[in-house]
Amino acid sequence: MAREDRFGLDWSDDELDFIIADYFAMLRFELDGVHYNKSEHRRSLVERIGRTEGSVERKHQNISAVLIELALPIISGYKPLPNFQKSIIEAIDRYLTRNPGDLIPEPAARGFDEASSLFVEKPPVLQIASHRDKELVRLVRKFDPVERDLRNKSLGKAGEELIFAFERQYLIAHDRADLARKVRWVSQEDGDGAGYDIHSFNHNGSERLIEVKTTNGLQTTPFYLTRNELSFSNERPKEFRICRLYDFSRKPKLFELAPPIEKFVRLEPLSFSASFD
Image (cartoon, rainbow, N blue to C red; front, side, top):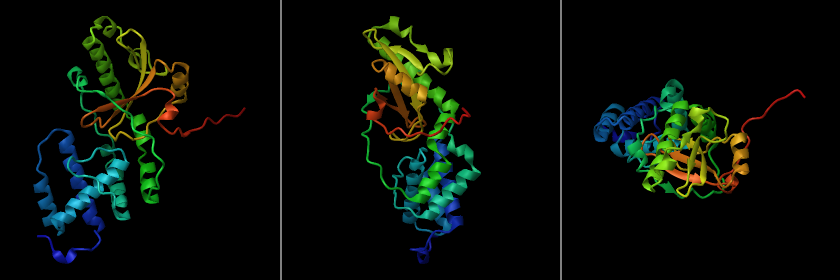
């Protein structure tokens, strides 16, 4: 049973390690579509670590807040509570270091039918950079979501496949089956390097040259843009579009960015070419 004499006491490392492991276990169930009972998990935690149900609930919300910063999916219903202590950042660091597989959830298969549920939202508004706790900044750098999404080839391919289906379905819905048959998945057929992934069309026959960026994170999760992609966007501003898919592991959502890309995002150099001449 929960012991009231623990009210107001800091959580120990063992308590945090246990609740974080249990959170990820529930999250895996949710992402895999497996039924589970949050209340049973919460009661089990209360019995095991001697905290009140309210305390456990708030800690779940703290975990959600940190995972959002890492562009990871969170458990539905555990609304992020950002006023968390340094100890929970350290505990999540320990967990992800020991369980790197939880950083990259396997993308679910997305069929042609699911593309019909997508619609193009308005892009997010560019925000003024806010101050972030240095420990949280360090954690995000260690498990960099931009780098993680870039290296997650299965996620990138799944996102491109969904947009490929979405473009074809759009054209068919606008009585342009002739154009739908001409849509090409360029990155799969020709390989990377073209500056875009999908060669599609508007219903009037004009071209759409689409670069797909996919994340399991939020609408505002940063993404990687190559020099080639940026250059191509400036060369073909009328045709080029970035299709940003987010929340992909749960229910994919979509918005588009049209050149100039700098109107929507801050561009920062991430790497440099080191030469001897």
